[in-house]
Image (cartoon, rainbow, N blue to C red; front, side, top):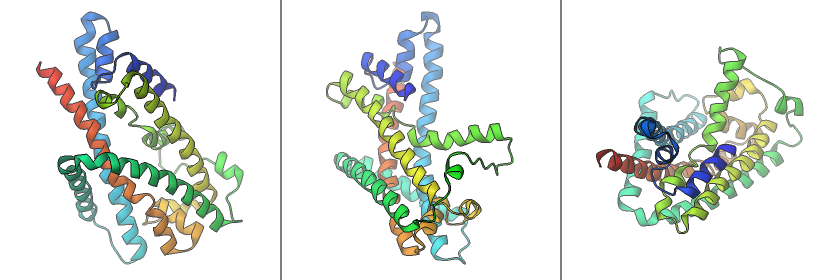
Length: 275
């Protein structure tokens, strides 16, 4: 939230699609502006390319997990997941290339679906698992390190998972030139993204940990940890997949939406580099 507040202040002062590399150019020492802006720009572009790539990866993992969940004899191959991953990318490309006018409606629908899914999943898993909840000490104090790395490094690696759920809030900066009243609405959107993510994410993770059950079964389950937790809570394969459907379609929308700010940033950075 502190990082978002800092970037929101820059966005209010310099509402340009270039975002961070433009802000660095505005506040750096003059002789260091080309180098620092160049480094910042490429870090930002590389990060967004990686973020776009992660969308299809998450979606393909969930779908392969569903197949493994319903067919215990299924032996997943890497190329299976890769084909699904390519499918996600093709859908994202087609939506951006040929159905651009539909994206605002898809995004609004996905936001409503996301909040509704958060409420439905949280209530359902808690109700179905009652009263067999994990203890408070397990949820809030238990530290499990099965990575093979020292505890300190494992803890730092764990922060990456939490960070992924809150990253990408600078997307509004790269779309700012299309937003009315950008100096006011842009910072508000940026802060709201992080605020909603923190509040709903904390409650959602708390609910999942309370109904997780045997951690070893969750981490080693071929269906994936999320589906394993749903099944442990509901004891129903059909119910678990229905709950997962609150998540899986959102990745299609998120993947398509990630392409938009990433393409804006790349185009803006390329234009500035060639000018």
